[in-house]
Image 1 (cartoon, rainbow, N blue to C red):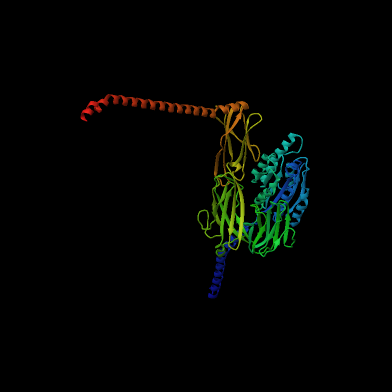
Image 2: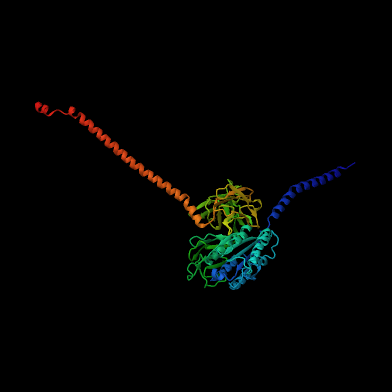
Length: 606
């Protein structure tokens, strides 16, 4: 027989086990969920930026003042200290000018010292070897790193006096090196320092990897070009600089002023809220000042709160960058955008890697975007909202959103996000190139009078694995033929259409079908391109004998007909008028004696 005490003891144990089980069933999923949440919060990938500078002899003409030096120093100075970087120069040989390392103050000092060795003494332009040596460890994709290459060159692939060897080197760049780097998810930005450079090669390197390509005709633009690439490769937190004034809040740990010089002889001054005046001549432990003929770069640690002023020429490219605990995080906007596309844009404020959701803090926060382009003087104003409507998923969750529209104009558009929190301000600027097609399409006549069609897709606009490209071609007085355009390298689709030397206008259109990164089907047909084949004199004669002459003949006939109509109308009117007058006269003669009394009757009556 079981005692009552034993029964209650077993019951207590059972109840304890049951309570523990219930507790574990409730707490364990929460713990697992919490661990999962923490585990998904991975640190952002470490940026690794490698810079390749052309020092071939042709640079003596394209960069006679060696403006590559201050441009490289500016770029290096602005790099955050938590990234890796290195600088290589290339001519016939490749030299690691500044070894690849963490971009700390020691590394930046080395860049400033070694920049003096950037010259124009190279005999060739060995882009292939520069790419191989600078990316020796980038054979496979590593999600822990965000890898970027910046190439600055003014020439073409040139490793030998033998043309075939140069062509082979160029082919290896596109078919071997580019394939490896693309698979490793390396982004390549390219700067062509002359329109005579191999822009087709540089454009392919950029387009195939999601980078941007810039062409400049003078190195006077090089500093600002490097800054445009800097904004893409490693954007930094900024404050709005309005009328050369900027408001600094207490969350700012470090502030950097970049001002471009218009008058090289005039000094730049930075004036603090308390009236302290900083200049290149005035040394201070908290201030680092670097001056070049083109710009001033000033960094101030633990700056005063309040309004700072810049005594320098106002330039739209001047900027104020900061190190702060209060960060503005935004959507990654593309570098290129298809005309008419709509962008869903999101932004939030962050502290210690956490989204700020406090309503007492966000109550005074206002976010807006100034959207401008090269043809419109007054920008569009777009307000971001956190109201749970439209594309904004949740109300008052700290994430602000807006749709960016009006992207039809084929120009470079500037999107300036401004955040006003009453006691603080933030700024983020992005430039986007609006393009007509999701690819660069080039239709040209070959030296053998055939037609070459080249298509270089923008990787960020269309999935290259889904592409179907067709050329629709018609010879003079013949029906259309279709030519598939095949992939010849990781970046280019190409075909050659035989014309059989038939004289006249040959018409080509290109049809592109593919999917964008969201899986939406894109169908594009280009405008018809007319390519004339034959003798130039015949071309002028044919062109002269077409519409203009017919138009003039029609005009002459119309004018002749018009004058004849006027003449006949005039003669007809006068004939009718004369006939009417004559008829009236005849009637008057016939009846005048019946209407008027005779003279004798008048006398008698008198």
